Image 1 (cartoon, rainbow, N blue to C red):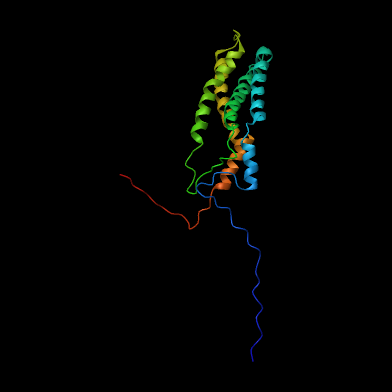
Image 2 (cartoon, rainbow, N blue to C red):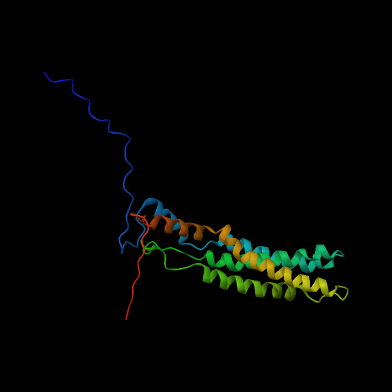
Length: 205
């Protein structure tokens, strides 16, 4: 006589659907989330860049009409920091605000990894912002008062250099919506690599 029949094994929790795998020529946005992100990244972020431009103009006007007239050197040195930060933000944020996606072309990094680096253009814009921020400050400042010491004038230049550099890199920490959407699309399109690490090399003649 046969013994009791064992119950069938429990099917377990439902498995997640397999991730979408992009083909080499799959360049259009396919998923609903990707289409939504591409729509955000396809239009220039006027609000972000416009806010930076307004900050530049405001800092120049406040500097020439109010801060320049103050007796305290520390108060006067607010102007180059404000102008430099706004100017760097305008240059760096203006580039990142440019359209970064197209409904017919949303290509991302290949499965083997992204071969395009973002740092060269970031360094280039940072150098331009650093070099030109003190020029923006002194150009719209007008004639420097004779009672200003050489130390204060040098401090204005170095503060402008530092704030211009910081402002140009700030958009990578607080990015406009076009850049943020583009980077999320890239993360979605990076295919996972299975099988652990591997090492390979190639030679050409």
